Amino acid sequence: MRTRVAASLILIALAIVSILGAFALSLTNAARQFEHALIAQRQSFLVERIARDANADDFAAMRDNLREYRALIISEQRYLPGKQGNSVEAKRADDLTRLADENVDHQRLRAVVRTIADAERAEVADARAGLDSTRWRTMAWGCLLALAAIGATVVGAMQLLCSNRDLAGEVAARTAELRAIDQSRRLFFAKASHELRTPVTAIRAIAEVALADHGDSRSALDDIVSQTDFLGHRIEDMLGLAMAAEGRPVVIPVPCDLAEVLDLALHQAGPFARSMDVAIRADHAGAQGLALIDKRWLTQALLAVIDNGLKFSAPGDDLVLGLTISAGSATITVTDSGPGVVERELPRIFDAYYQADEGRSRGGTGLGLALARWVVEQHHGTIHAENRGGADRPGCRIVMTIPLLEGVA
Image 1 (cartoon, rainbow, N blue to C red):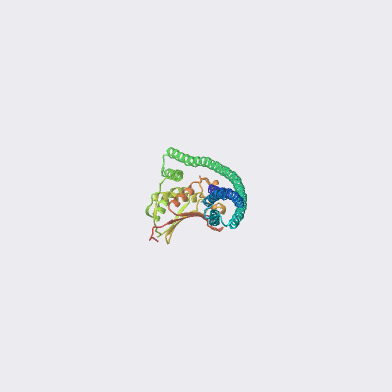
Image 2: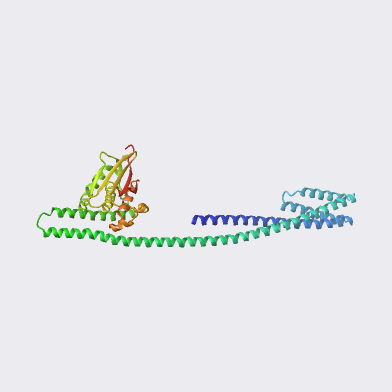
């Protein structure tokens, strides 16, 4: 918008400057024509006096008037350089001066005077016509300049109104966005408090039961480990997304085998999955892909996706973790057997704080998939979600594509 307003103002300014220049040139031309008209009028007056002196045979007075007339011809040429007819006037004035000096052929002298007088009267008429034309042209340029100034004022006012309206709309949109962010943050803190309080309460209860029971506490310790892993994943999600929003350069990529990332994520997610009676099944036998990655961050992203799949898995379900290698890229998939996602909500599940209706009913903070998208994008990859489809095979599949190192396939 600002660029369009600036361009419009520049065009208006150029138009006004052009009209102003034309108006100034017209004024200059009018001044020159006015000088020409004065000289032509004076020349015509002198020629009439010369004719009167010739008829009275007053050659002395005629010579004085001829000298002034000759000087006016030179002045006229100075004001109107290159004007056609000046040389003719000068020649006639010279002929008339010679005839006056000879004082012999009075008839020819009077004929030359009449010719000069007719020419000067015609020149005066032309000068007046030109002056009238210039006057009207100057008035037209002046009116056009005034109209341009009025138009510029109107356009500037309209642009200002449009800018103010756009600015008001932008402010309203930003205000609504800030309100939505504030509402999302409030919702996040409420959910995060609930999500973090749940495993802490469970850990405390398990520990108290273990202390009260003097028997084998290995099962209790396993439960505590799974709950602390869940708690750690939630904290890592929050810290990771906070650092991503701040733009901190936390991703340090090094060459690494993507199969190692899957194995590490599978090992870390195992205890929590077992506590939910969900089996994580790896489907990447023999698949190896060397990529430039930050192992810690990519593992965290994969854990966030696994945690999302576990949230939608029922006891006894399988969560399939896959890795396939193709030309130039590796594809990591996490497939659950849950109810799937409504098609219109698939693109939005990677937005921070956003949760589909099914996700809200199952808990969570809406940060895990947002963190996963940020990590994958930092590795110049892509991530998307898709439903598996079919009543016999429900569920959702998260697909992450990571570019491999050049020369690796």
